[in-house]
Image (tube, rainbow, N blue to C red):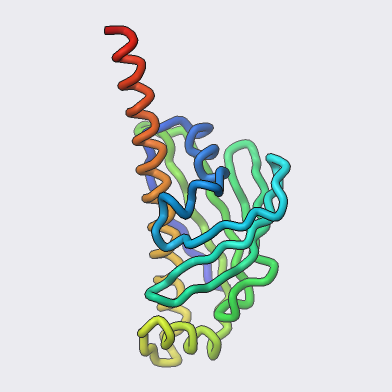
Length: 170
């Protein structure tokens, strides 16, 4: 298994940030590589969703099951795309000096030959020994695009809320 994580700071409270990460309806409009979200189940704690994602001109669909905790959202793809035999991870939302620090974690197992085919379809010719590393880079890039888009959304909403409050006070 290959694991990696990164952090992103968002100028909002952990509950605001977690709310935006949980609300999948907006993802296709804010994250350009997310083509569609098909929510099959959502009770506020558990979600089952199929996501259509565009990676370097190649569309992939996969199902995720997400579990909402007090300060986290954990997920697993019970049927990951063919390039992976396992994909699970989490977002943890921590109160920080700049608002919220989001810790994004991924655990993956790469299915080498289908991954090479996927990368070739995405116009990436990768030697066999580098497939896992490049798949990690692709997943990291897509994940970072989503988080940056959600960051922009929550921070824009927040500044709009502050602008509205300031207009009412003036």
